[in-house]
Amino acid sequence: MDRHLLITYKEKLPKTIICLAKEIGISVPLLTALKKDTNCVLLNSEEVFLNRELHQGDKLELIIKETEENPTIAPQDIPLDIIYEDDDIIVINKPAYMPVHPSLNHPLNTLANALVYYYRNESSPFVFRCLTRLDKNTTGLTLIAKNPLSSAILNKDMKAMHIHRIYYGLFDGEIINGGTVDAPIGRVNDSIIKRCIDTQSGKAAITHYDVIKSNYNYSLCRLTLETGRTHQIRVHMSHIGHPLINDFLYGDESTGFNSRQLLHAGEMSIVHPITKKNMTFNAPLPDDFNEYMSNH
Image (cartoon, rainbow, N blue to C red; front, side, top):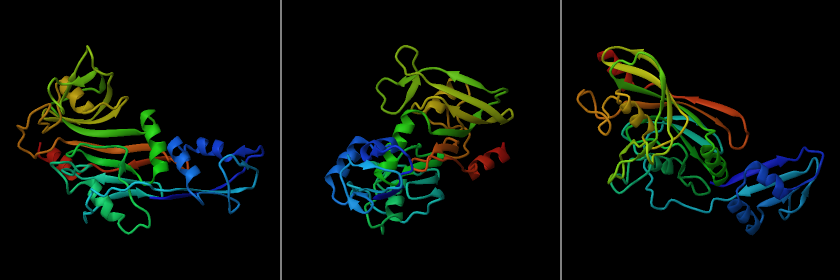
């Protein structure tokens, strides 16, 4: 989607538009697009170049245009549990069994299909840019950027580990105390999907966990990650002898309860890409967590 930024310059010292744009977080590709497009850089309603100086009280308008499309993602009318939405981001509480992206095996019924339908009537194209991906069977908070500018800024924040997520999981067996798992993770030989503890060539991975509720059959834990490795929680908790309930890759499916691993992204904290406000989002534990605990 296109994004219009209206900025009143309040600083006493003058500054070029390009310097301000870089401070905001506008990436080099977006700056290049601004240079090429007409009527995308307006100073006091006049089209100007990016090297123009801003003075106190000036009104600057920047129009970041969407240049891509998702023609291969079919729109589908699928209900969405929207936690928050504004001009720059949308936060969805993703249900179980829903892939985030279409694939060869799952071309439909994904979060991307649902959002393409949701934004089908917008004046500019919607490109699906998911920042916090979840496994198909993991529920919870998923952050999507609605325009190229918010995507560029949030991607940088992701790499710097400035987007913080808290997970909740139901694990096999009784865990008495919380702790930290510090064990490198690598890919299992000859497997595209599966990961393992690899002390020789794996990448550093650190998971902190606290016990919320525990009995002989299961433990409900709150988990925070210092790193973001693929399947990190699943690999680490299996490594200490407490795999996720129903985890077919790293545990077993002997419970007969349901067909998904019981993992939920329940909390997320970000700095908003444009307003720079600190924001925290929450999604309650899904019904299958509560059902499992009631029956065990």
